[in-house]
Each structure stands twice: as structure tokens, then as C-alpha cells.
Length: 453
Ligand code: NAP
Image 1 (tube, rainbow, N blue to C red):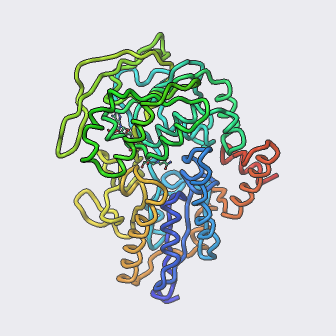
Image 2 (tube, protein in one colour):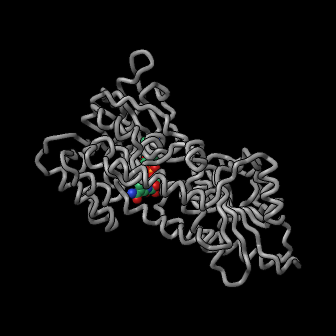
Image 3 (cartoon, rainbow, N blue to C red):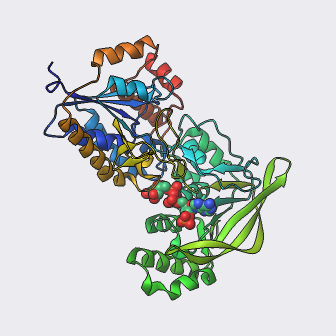
């Protein structure tokens, strides 16, 4: 086919919300014929919708319906069980396709950088989330839930998810799609109290009001907030944006409630862990520094006061954010944990655009925002991709046959969207047999085995 007539061939790496929203925007464009191949290292698509959203938040998972519609487009293909960066390099993709979009998210976690962080019992919250959601990279992690108190460092929505899963009645999780190993471990858990540590004050807490309301509404869970810790923020209520004001008013309501019997979630503000200690390699205590707020570059920042408190705890989850992981051969901004870009066009450290390479989602802007945030973000990148393709009508990529040939030459067992639909059907069937929504397979190998059977 003459170059300008042949469809634009786009590879998208990563099948989470950012990848699917971008695929949708590219496929729906009215100016250029396109074909989209989406690469995914797992067999199951949808990224954090499947393995990040908590099992008791099924409504949020409905966003996958839109992704299913995109996948039904005949010009879309899912190439599952292929790990870009291992099975195939980004450089190779740039030769095989006209354009490559990286929407790989942020699969790492941030560290506190304090003594004792590596003790057994100290974990990344992201590992716990992956574990209860049956993500193949975390399904085999072990969490010793035999202690009475757990600490969660950070006050974002992930911290709220982790705290809620630790205290929620397990009977309320039993019918969800929680991984069976997590359900069993939580049923045997002896954790009675979760302390959430916020390094700044209540007005700066990152969680959404809905998350706190959800937690406060749980049966058998008492959310405790010290009224004295709230007061300075309440004194300035009028100066705060409406959303923060409502959050603070709700926190004040909780602080005034009489104590409820049951498990406890305690929110400690202006507190940062300074050191974890234990006997042998096992975590048993956290040394926590009290902070004060100071203004830095127009923002309220935490500053240590030199005053400390000790807290016994057998478990700590650092929930201080996900972190982007570099891909071989692709520029990376270590400090921000993102691939440097201008509105989605990847640039080198000296600011030059890398031809044909784009980013969307967390690896573009950092690990923040809810699923829907990715829609306009991906649309922006897609718009630039289409504009660049219109400006340069030469199509350099290879044919789909050549791409498939290379993948099979490498001995890769590439799975399709129909394979996923079959896995999905089997998981739902297993769930039904177990009296729950879904029972996930825990690895690509298990899924391949199920597909063979
Ligand atoms: P996040 O919202 O950025 O929260 C990170 C928390 O960690 C903040 O409280 C932050 O405090 C704290 N922190 C960072 N560095 C720290 C340090 N060195 N020491 C102590 N505390 C530290 O991140 P996230 O909770 O991982 O969530 C990621 C994104 O996913 C967010 O946009 C979130 O809304 C979204 N999400 C949404 C849902 C939902 O909609 N239900 C569920 C899960 C996640 P500072 O504020 O002081 O920096």
C-alpha cells in the first residue's frame, strides 16, 4: 500500500486505564486509518482496575466496561504475556511500529529511607494491595498478621484501602473477588488496631472524604481522631477550599463521637516514622517523630520537632506513593519517577523529542489521580500522536505479519483478547463455585494451563 494510505500502526505498552483510554481516542479518530496493538506482560488486562482497586470497591471496577468496548474494535489487538523490555525492547518496537505509546504505570514503590525499613514486618502498601488482589507479582508475598497493631505510613487513598482491608469484617469480603489466600489470612488476622500516620496536618491529608466516610461507616470499626490535633486546622476552616473544609468537618464529627466497640483505626497527624526496631529481624516497634507545619515555597511542609514517641507494632505498611520504573533505552527522570515528556511526547534530557515515542498515565505525570483522570491525560497524548502522524505521512513500521513472525520466532506464547475472555469466564465460574464474584488465577502460567485444559 502507498505509505499515506496504509494505516498508522501504533503499539501501546501496558493495558491499564491510561493505555485503554489512549487506544480508544486513537481508534475513534476521524482523520487517519489506524491499527492498535496493545502489549501486556500479564494475560489479564486492565492494570490497577483489576489489581489496584480494592475488592470491596466493585463499583469503581465498572470502568472496565468501557475498555471492553474498545477491545471489541476489530482494529484493536491485545498481545498478552509479552514483557516489553525483556521479550522485546522499546527500540525494536520503534522499528516495528510507526508510533509507540508507553502506558506502563508506576510498578515500583517509594521508600522511607529510615533505619529498620528492611525488617521483616515492614512492607510496601503496594505489595499488600497486589497480594489481596491476586496480582501475579505479589500473590506469593507473606504478611504476618499475628500482631495486635499495624501502622500505615501515609494518608492517601491507598493508605485508607490498606487500613480498611485490615479491619473490615472478613464476612463482608468473602463474596468479592479478593484472592482466596488473602481472605484466609485476613480471617486468621489478630490485628485489632491500625494507626495511620500523616506527616502533615489534617487539612493536608490526601485521602478523599468518601474514603473516610466509608471507613467510618464500617460495622465494628471505630475511627479515632484526637480533637486537639484537629483544632489548629479547624481554627482556619474558613480559609480552606470547600472540599478540604468538608473533610475537616467530618473529621471533627468523628472526633466528637463516643468510642465504638470493635477494631480501631487511629489517625495520627504531624507524625513521621524515624526508625523501626525489633528483636532479631522481626519488627516490633516504631520510633515516631512529632512534626510541626512550616511554610515552604507557599506550601505547608512537615518539619521534625525533635520530640519522639514509641509505638509497639508488628507490621508497618509504607503507603507513601507508587514509583515509576525505568525501561531500558528510554529516558527517565529519576527524581520524579517519570519518563520526561512534553504533553506526552517523550523527550531526551536535553529536551529533544524522541521520534515516534509517547507516554500516558502515571509514567507520564507521576502516580496521582483516580482512574478517570487518565481519560483527558491519554486523550492529550493521542491528539499529539495523531497530529504528528498527519504531519509526517511516511509510515515506517512493519506489517502485522512481520510483527507476529518475530514474536513467534522468539518462542513467545502470545495471548489474545479472546484468551483473556476465556480466562475471565473461567474465573467467574470458579468464583460462582466458591460463592464469590470471581476467583482469580494467580499467574500467567496458571492461566495458560487453564486455557490449555
Ligand atoms: P497519595 O495520594 O499521593 O498519598 C501519599 C501519602 O503519602 C500522602 O499522605 C503523603 O503525604 C504521604 N507521604 C509521601 N511521602 C512521605 C514520606 N516520606 N513520609 C511520610 N509520608 C509520606 O498516593 P496513594 O495513596 O499511593 O494514591 C495514589 C493515587 O491513586 C492517588 O491519586 C489516589 O487518589 C489514587 N487512589 C484512589 C483510590 C480511590 O479512588 N478509591 C484508591 C486508591 C488510590 P504528603 O501529603 O505530606 O505528601
